Each structure stands twice: as C-alpha cells, then as structure tokens.
Image (cartoon, rainbow, N blue to C red; front, top):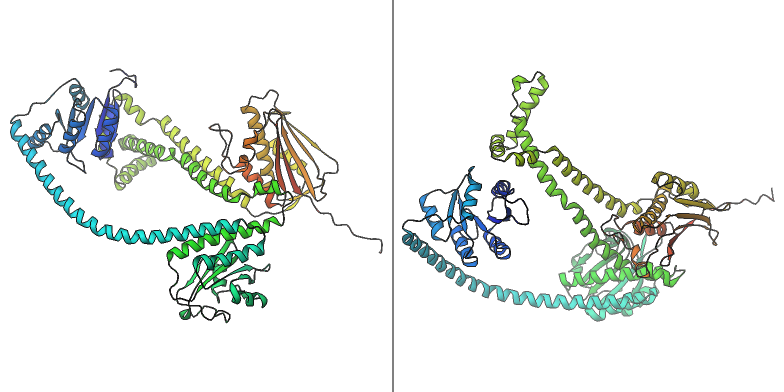
Length: 640
C-alpha cells in the first residue's frame, strides 16, 4: 500500500485495553493511519471528527455494549464499515454484531491474517447473517428492555435531584455569604494597600475590620527588633487607646494566641474563649467570648499578628477565617510596602522593582507551565524504553545456557528468566508477539539507537528541570560574604565560559576597591549577564559581536560599580520592565529559562546593591551592577 502518511487510509480502533490498542497499532502502522479511542463515547466523537475509512470496535467495552456502539456509529457514519473484534467467538456473538449493523466479525486472539481481513473489509467485504430477522428482533427487544431500565433510573434520578436541589439551595446561601465576606476582604485589602504610612495603615486596618465585619475588637501587633515581643501598634476604640497608652505588649511564646500564631505562622482560633486554658486573658477586654489570631507573614517571616475578638460565642466560621486570613495576608504585604518606602532612594525606579505581587503570581503560573512542558516527554520515553527492554529480556532469556562457557553469563541468563517471572513478565508471550511482527517493525522495537534516544530525551528534560530549580533557589542560599576582587572573579568567569578570543574586553580603574560579597552568588550574576549578552549578539547576527566590561569605584565610595555593555540591537522599551520577571525570555523556543535576570536582581538586592538597564534600539544594552565595597578600618596612631 501507499507509504505516504498523508494518503494512508484511516482506521479507528475502539478498545479499552492499552495492550490491544498497542498490538493493533503495531500490526497496521505500516499501511494505515491508526486512530485510537479508549471507550465508545470518545470513539463516537473521534469518528465524527475524522470520518475514518473503517472502524474496528472491541466487543469488551464499558459505558454501552458493543452492539449499541455499532448501532450509534452506523447511524452517525452510515457509509463507514464497522467490524467487531471479539474474544467471544460464538455464533450468537457474531450474529448479534452483524444484526447491530457491523459488516464483519474478527475473533480474538488476533491472528496473522488480521491485516488481510482489514483490507478485505475496506474493499467492501460484508459477512452474511442467516436468520437475520430473528436476531434483529432479539436485538430490538433487548434495546427496548434497556430503555425501560433507563427510564426507571431517570425517574429515581429526578427524585434524587429534588433532594439535591434543596441541599444546593442551602449551599448557595452559604456561598453567597462567603462571596460577600471575600468581597469585603478584597475591598479592605484594596484600601489598606493604598496607604503607605505605617501608623495610618494600622489604624485604618483595625477600624475597617470592626466596622466591615461587625466585630467587638481588633488589634495589630508587630514583632520587636529583638523578636522577643509582640508590640501592640494599633487597637480599636477605647480599649485599644488604653492599651496603646500603656505600651501593651506580649512575649512571643505559646502562652498567648498572638504569641503562638507568630511562632507557628498559623491561625489560632478560640470559639469559646472562656474554655481555653492556654488563652491569655486581657483585662482591657473582659467581654471577649470568641477570639482569633492571624499571623502576618512576609517572605516566610512572621512580622506580627492580627487579633479579632467577638462578644459572642462561636462567632467565627470557615468563611470568616478564610476572608480574614486573605485580608491579613494583604495587610502583611501593605506593612512590608510601608517599611520599604522608608528606604527608597529613587521612588520611580524602586516602585517598578517592588511589584512583588505581580512577579510572584507570574512566576507561579510560568513555573507550572515550564516544568510541565519539560517533563512532558519523560513518561512517553520511559514507556518506550520499558517496552524495548522487555523485548530485549525476552531475547536474552532464549540464550542456550549450555553454549555459554562463562559461569557468570549462564547465571545471568537464569537470573533474567527468574526475575522476569517474579516481576510478572510473560517472556513467551512477548516472544509470540515479536514473532508476529514484521521484520522492520521488530527491528525498530529492539533498536538500541531508539532506546538511547529516549534516554537522551529523559536526561535532557531532567537537566532542564534541574537548571530551572537551580535558577529559582540558587539566589536564596545562605551568603558567605568576604572581600572579593571583582576583576579577577569576572576574568575567571569569562575564561571558563569558553567564548571566542577577544569577544569580551575588560577594563578596571586603579582605585577600584574589593567588593564585600558572596563570591559564588556574584559569579552567577556576571555569568548570567555576559551569557545573556553573548546569546543576544549571536541570535541577532550582530557583525563583529563585542562585550565590554568596565569596573570602577562608584560615586558613593561605599560601593563598586561594574557595567556589562554589548553592541547588539538593544532591548525595546516595552520589554525593559518585563525582563526582570521570572520565566520571561526574549529567546522564544531558542533556549533560555527566563530565570537569569530575575536571579541577578534577587542576588544584587540581597547584597544591598542595585542593578539597572540602559538601552536604546540599535545602540546595544548596558547592565550596571552596584555592589557594596569592602570597608577599610583606619587607626589613628598620632597619639601613640
């Protein structure tokens, strides 16, 4: 037959057994395009989409009988022949299949003549059915009985649905309340995150919690600098004012709900405050009957806690807890933003860098997408290698031990047989299967080259995932700062990168100080910057690509400044903000994980430095890295 896959006839095989589908696929793959479905419903949909030349339907399927499936397929594709493949070889099974609309019947196990039978049915063969009217009547009676049974089931379902409807109405009321709570929490979050003055932020927060959620009291504690105390920074109404005047604080231990929530980073809830032995009884709040303490967490560190108290028993349910914890998370971020504002040197530049919320959300979605894409080839490759290994084991087990002079080899062959049997492998069945294959198909199934290619796919996918992991957690490793010569570090980095001679030019001023940094992490910074620059030059086919690295003491003498400049096409304005986001890459499918620049920014920021970009279209790109310099200690010896 024609070997052009675009012109090969399509054959749809519907069978639940993966082994059956795999066998038919191997037998027909050379001369047909084999479509597969694991159940009749999927098969019906696939048949409607593809209009195959022939449909093979396994007799042993669920959801509906093969006869029903054949009838529905016949109605949908009246001109497509349907052949039942069945392990039940009785005359009755064959007659039922033909009465249901099939043109033929192929018994199992599938024999060597399977492909010839498929070709005959494609060419118009129709098996004759004696006493067709009798079998058709029997089939119609069977369908009528099934319709009656389904009608009874539908009646029962209607009654069940009435009950479920009443339950759903109750659930809807609960969900509507939860929606209102979440909507309020979102509105609260929007309000508090727009306030950047810390004391004003905390006051507004406790007022909003009590007014919007109708609670008796709310207060916010922040962790002291020595992390031993939770200090009240905002409290609601008169009780809150009195506690603030008294410099109210609680030790961070397990003797209070506030202390436990900070230590464990988990919500603490007392629906009956009087029955909680470990709860700290606050003399300023004698009417408290229910209490909840929610941790305020920023970058996995507890910075404080919110207390919410009610004068009613059992005042909190799951919706309240979810809504309030959502709001507490937003308050924590707002507190962090308010603290960051104190240290900003350049408001416009740093506002861009503190879009933490957006970066985290983007990185989470992209991480799932990246890892999923890179892991996708692994299961298929492993499955193919496993199948090929089973075939090779079957061949090894056929070796004649008596012909092997080496005792170790004889023992190894015996071990293959024994362990294969222990693992549930039927080597004889595999040999029968291999014997039924065509020579070219058999050679492909035991191809060493194919196995090595699949193993290479698995290895490459795993390495890419490990590279992504390293890019994500590498900057978070503990630093070991020490005086480092950046000129020597960068020179060694460039040498190890194996770039062409003269591709990188380096220039250092004489007064350039040592940097006080973690050498390993800073090496990653410049490796990423130089690697990105070189790849941009190559991908853009820049003539005479060149990278220039310059280092000097910064205008602020406490810092050293290094610039990495290339003569490439530059980075467009609309991308200059996005390049710092994790998993964003301008390389498309040509490599790159999109973690390089996000790791650069994270490492430099953790060192107390700064990194920024200057670029104009057609004039290349320059990355500036400012890092802390070694601080010299000078002794005054004039009085000695």
